[in-house]
Length: 458
Image (cartoon, rainbow, N blue to C red):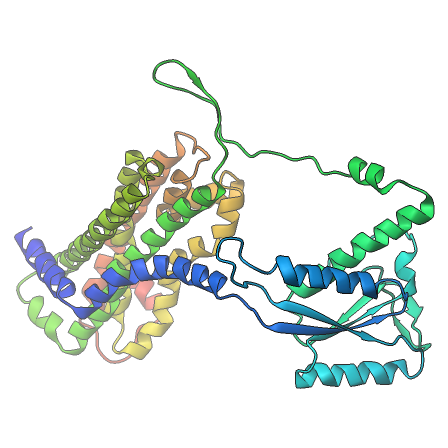
């Protein structure tokens, strides 16, 4: 046992004193806070350019109202209400005559203007926009009814009331604004044509509002406490930060193991160490040392996060129960994944060989990151439940589920913990057998069948 602690303390001192550890201490706050700060900065420094749009209004009735709406938007809607600074682009509409001659050539000429930057986009509005034709419409901004029809030039085109041309189709604000503005005026014209009172129609179509609330609780005094408005941001951010914290700690606590053991093997240091201790003691010492490194980072980041929450009076978002589960699952995960990294590193002879083994080991760690949208949307679903009980993914996914407002059935967390403990014991036992053989192997890299044979037969 003393030899295991000697190796553990040596691994801990080497890692804590390294520049990589200091970078890791700073990385997490920068990664989390920097992303939020960058998003806030980008909102303050939004796109304030002028976007010129040519409009071909074949109805002869919509351009003036569009121009009026654009001028009203440019005067009042694109500025921050608090600072008065412009935060959105200015829309400038230019009228193009709606002649039927050489329609294809005009579209080409306007497209060339978009390419050279003198226009941002151009729009064609067909007379059929006033027609009332029931049926499915596209959700794409400004595009509806995909039947084939003839345009003003007699050419067959995809049937639609509005056609929006641009080489920046990922920019959706402008076509969405055009779609909404044109749709409002077209609906008003349709109401007038049908002899309907717009106020009555809009009143009948007014949407029904819904308040998203938490649950009603009973205070310690026995008084019933009404539900408060649900904080969607905190409901998402806390589980997301918990998952990211677990992932970062696992990366810092386990991935260096594969490079450390490979370096010792290449320099023949491991052969000297095996002269004074057993391979299993060496492996366990490394695992314990890197577990303490992960705990040190957790303490630093945890204290910093708690101080930040306390400063913003948000400490109620963190439960002591969650901290306990996080600690248990983190310890188990470092041993489980770390043993696999050590086994993989001991089988290789150089850095290039590790590339073929590192991805299968890291894949279970990446799965929870890929499942974030699903976990947020349906944390109690069958898929989320399965992966939160599956030992290789349970540490991260179960911890994230425990951080969410949706309660986890009482039996699932203990079952996940037991399954993780059993899997960790299996991984450490098998990795110890592979580590003992692979550490002294030189020359040709072993095949997967050889590694499996070492794990089973030793």
